[in-house]
Amino acid sequence: MPGSGVNMTVDAGPVPSGERPRAFKVKIKHWRTLASWSWNAGDDVCGICRNPFDGCSPEAKYPGDDSPVVWGTCRHAFHLQCITQWLSSQTEQRCPICRQNWEFKSAEENEE
Amino acid sequence: MDLSRVQKEIKEISLDKASGISVRVMGNDLTRLQGTINGPKDTVYEGGVFVVDIEIKGVYPFEPPKMRFKTKIYHPNVSSQNGAICLDILKDQWSPALTIKTALLSLQALLCSPEPNDPQDAVVAKLFLGDHPLFERTARHWTRTYATPGQETEGLTQLLEMGFTREQAQEALDGAAGDLNAAIAALLG
Ligand SMILES: [Zn+2]
Ligand SMILES: [Zn+2]
Image (tube, rainbow over all chains, first blue to last red; front, side, top):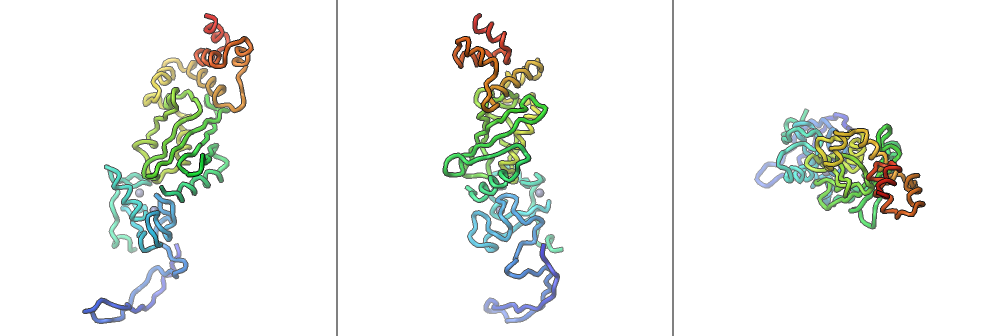
């Protein structure tokens, strides 16, 4: 996975009305240029549709926007659409790769 | 259907020359494929090439590909009548992380290790457990007869020369597990 761990200052950009515009400092642990943008997943390819995570799920139109990547507590990653479609067709909720019980890993747990 | 995934899978199989499986597209969409499995070495299926009909339905990969042996095969987990296959990953143990390739490789593995206690063909399974030498002779005979491209067994040739029709001769040989004398006896009996 690309990631150089740079620190940078970003402007928060337009904010919803009613909130004061402000600039804040963020620490970016994984920096990617737009050209080589990719999800921070253990594997580069969705285990269901086999499309790269920086591409679309078969149901989505635009890379990234409509194809969020989600993780299970087993650490396997899939497009949200792909895993949702699989789980909704199953009575037992299991990871397609390791067959462990599937539980969505929360966002905080992913930040390490 | 997820066409791009099926296309990728077909390409991946065609690049792998070592695994003894192949797949080709039948017709002009990707819903009908035909796979082949080389009979594994040191089994009664060695030397045979087994054709598997594959149907990819619109919900693939969320449902398994439908697979059926097109080549007649004598195996406890395959119907000797219509080629239907009893294999868990093609049914309730399917996962969308599996592929056409892993399914064909699983079939190849099934040829190495039949599971007669969970049979598709009860008659074949009974013979497998009850008279294993006869099972092996019959399975080898079927491999030579139905799965060996361009080869007519010596027994069949002789029976044809004796004036029996191909159907009669084949049926008698199958019934006699390929034993020519027993087949002749049956035909004349
Ligand atoms: Zn996907
Ligand atoms: Zn998993």
